[in-house]
Length: 296
Ligand SMILES: Cc1cc2nc3c(=O)[nH]c(=O)nc-3n(C[C@H](O)[C@H](O)[C@H](O)COP(=O)(O)OP(=O)(O)OC[C@H]3O[C@@H](n4cnc5c(N)ncnc54)[C@H](O)[C@@H]3O)c2cc1C
Image (tube, rainbow, N blue to C red; front, top):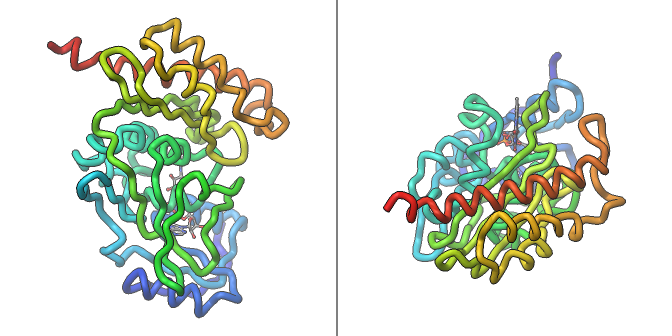
């Protein structure tokens, strides 16, 4: 399968990429990051951009750095480079757990953190972790930079708050170095994408959960937070009973009429998976929280 013809332009900088987006605003334009969602879509005719702007040479968009209380992740940072960063594991444990479960080694060697979030595939692994990590997405457009809280970023299936002339330049994650992160996913047997994936970030004091954020991919058209699960586990001692009881709240925060219902799984099955994987994510976080004590 071959894509339709398109104009290819190599961006020299983030500003140059935005100039190009603005210049071609009346045409269909795509940014080429890792290409692992875009190129399959182009080859199958689902996407036929007139212009392709390649971000591959823009070094300023790549890299992970920790500055004070924030982990800054350049939009075109590849998954594998994120996972190679000690700072990423220390400051963004929920993101690190989710990134580690994206696709396979080949996908992780090419795909990018920003491309994943900007693409907003409901079955992607990163939206829920970005939500539990309380990330801020930084967009660059013709009028300069704009910070978008993650809870305002995802609009629905493949839809985000980014304007057509804006691009994502970085993901800013408040340091969660005192917390434990986990991601539990039921992968699609055919693609490995999340049929359901649940991300948990727990701040644990001794064995008691001080603060919790829990979110899910694959349930509805966009990543969502599950505050009822988080509320149910906050203040509780972490054990199998408290985790199971909290996970029972998993469907309270999703509109059951909006549950994805497709060839992979019915909405009813996804609702069941949501509870099961909420429990697994919390259990994984519990194990992580007890790991240092076990090592003593
Ligand atoms: C075999 C296979 C298995 C996969 N399995 C999984 C999986 O298990 N979990 C998972 O989460 N993903 C999976 N993926 C998808 C993969 O993670 C993609 O890399 C990701 O969805 C998109 O990132 P990218 O960098 O490749 O973006 P691209 O494919 O280059 O771009 C995707 C879209 O995002 C836009 N875009 C890219 N960068 C920016 C930016 N900086 N600002 C604004 N818009 C931008 C592009 O215009 C395009 O519309 C899989 C892909 C393949 C091919």
